[in-house]
Amino acid sequence: MQGTIFQVLVLVTHGNAVLSGGTGVAIYPQHSAFKFDEFVKFVDIEQAGSDWVEKPFAANPTDWLAKLKSQKCSGLRVERVSTDKKDLSDRMSVAFVGGGGRWLIEAICPGGSDFWEAGWKVGNKSHPQQKIWQVTYGRIAKHRPTAAARTADLEGLTSSLRQTLQQALGFAQKHELAGFAEAFEAGASELASNSEPELRGLALPGQLPLAASRLLAASQSAWVFGGMGSWNDLGFDGEDQRQYEVISDALFRTINASLVASANLSFTGTERPW
Image 1 (tube, rainbow, N blue to C red):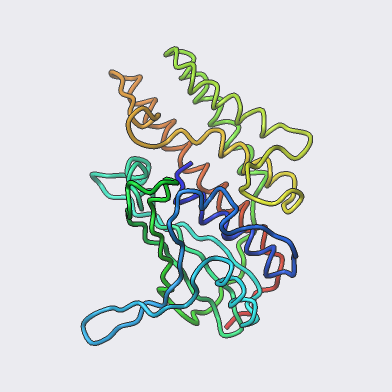
Image 2 (image 1 turned 60 degrees about the vertical axis):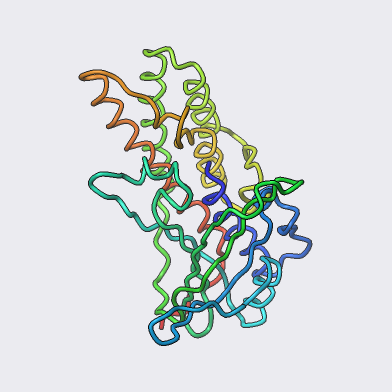
């Protein structure tokens, strides 16, 4: 999974643990989501005449969560906004930093919902610890009406993901794509697990319902999208290409829906409609 998406999901799940009163939740800089970041800061985006300027809000994720907690914010949710274009779908644009749709973090606070969005820039490519990324989360909207949480259809998502993984596996096996077949098999196995699968830091152990944990683990294993050498880089002829496109789009859509729905179940507070 792209680091940009992984980091947003980690901030939401671990952030909800912090905001709900959890202690000893390690997030920054210990978590692998920040391994290659020179810094991760948070700013307000404000208009000054015809320009937009950044006003410091928090120097890092730990300070950001502490500030949200001091402001009595009850929790976080992730929202994915599609940016599909006729000549470049989200599935294909995910190969680029910032591609694959917009991933927003909603902070649910007493005055309404605030929305944060990340910008990633390359800093020092020669950093001795490979911390080349400079990440800035900007608060792009404040005090918006808080919508009621959508009911997560975990059963429906599980069924859809299982079916799509079976189709992707069959296609991969037919074309002798062993590496991708293994990814789809792993996803299907985690989806059927009788106990909480390994979440690789995406959420805390025991934080989510089992069905949501299964979806997160399966989505991580089956995430094959990217640039050169990825599933997106494949091409076929005739009917095989048509099947590939249908399966790929369905898999991308279902995985993204599963990630959003599952991560948002880490928010256990109560929204206040405004």
